[in-house]
Amino acid sequence: METMLSVKNLGKTFKGKKVLENISFDVQKGEIMAVLGPNGAGKSTTIRNIMGIMYPDEGSISFRNYQEIPRNMIGYLPEERGLYKNVKVMDILLYLAELKDYPLKDAKERALTYLKKFNLEGKENVSIEELSKGMGQKVQFIASIIHEPELLILDEPFSGLDPVSQELFKDEIRNLADQGTAILLSSHQMNLVEEMADRLFMMHQGQKVIYGTMDEVKTEYANFKCTIKGKNDITILESLPEVQRVEQRENSSTLYLTKDVKPTTWLKHLPDQIMIQELIFDRITLHEIFIDIASGKKLIEEAGAVNA
Ligand SMILES: Nc1ncnc2c1ncn2[C@@H]1O[C@H](COP(=O)(O)OP(=O)(O)OP(=O)(O)O)[C@@H](O)[C@H]1O
Image (tube, rainbow, N blue to C red; front, side):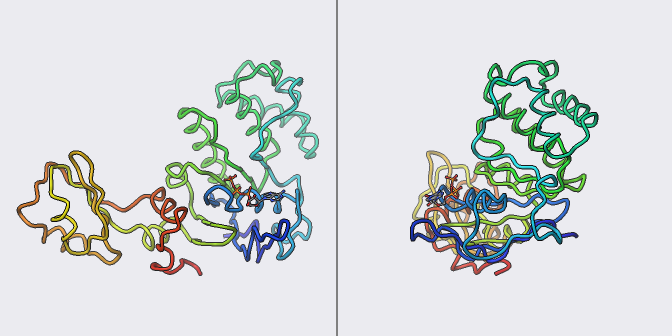
């Protein structure tokens, strides 16, 4: 594994308020690293510091062995969308490729390939302002990868996309990683992150709360839960061993279990009086871990930190 981006002990203060504190992570060649956190956690500030849009008060950022981050080796999809409005799709893509010293002939070929991939075939000569929001976002995504960057930074790439386009983006981001691109991704779509990220860095109020591979995070933080379909008395469910809390709906209940529960033993001891039409036993999702953190539950302190 080759480290492409290394962020060390980043700190940033705005008007006396510390918005980043001791942020450290790296991104390896060929991996998708997700930066997650609730609104205001500091994700965009971290990315803007990496991109040199602003400078950190503390810490350092390096790309491979370079002192200065070489802009033509990096692709960036900013959170704020918007390309020049009055310009044709192909013209803007070629212009941006040229700014990155990428050969025009190759850029044109790549542009056509990606326009086709994103169902924008034939839109080369349409001006940006005539495109829908989602179409514009696809063009902006193409603009961020037209020059074959070694490191790709995507700030909320899925926002505003319909489910089909989200899948297209997801597949393409995975493809790029498989071809060796190092990808740093910030997103609120937890289901997509869960499906695609190799590692994740979760932050809250400018600080690290979780850092590790998806498997490590799941094993460490995603306790088991058991969903039972059928009408049951909540007091009986709550009194079962190793049940932390119960969420009850009309005709089903979800039991959130303690960290060290052994599924086979636990299931064996379910009393006969419990009515089971269906039973699903799995782990809590990244979405649920995220909600716990964002709502300030003590999950992190209880579990300890991965890669602390
Ligand atoms: N230019 C700025 N001046 C002052 N404060 C700022 C500035 N930019 C960001 N902040 C503050 O820094 C904190 C982190 O903001 P940031 O935009 O990085 O969060 P985020 O995790 O990207 O949030 P979101 O998910 O809402 O995009 C917030 O408290 C925000 O108010």
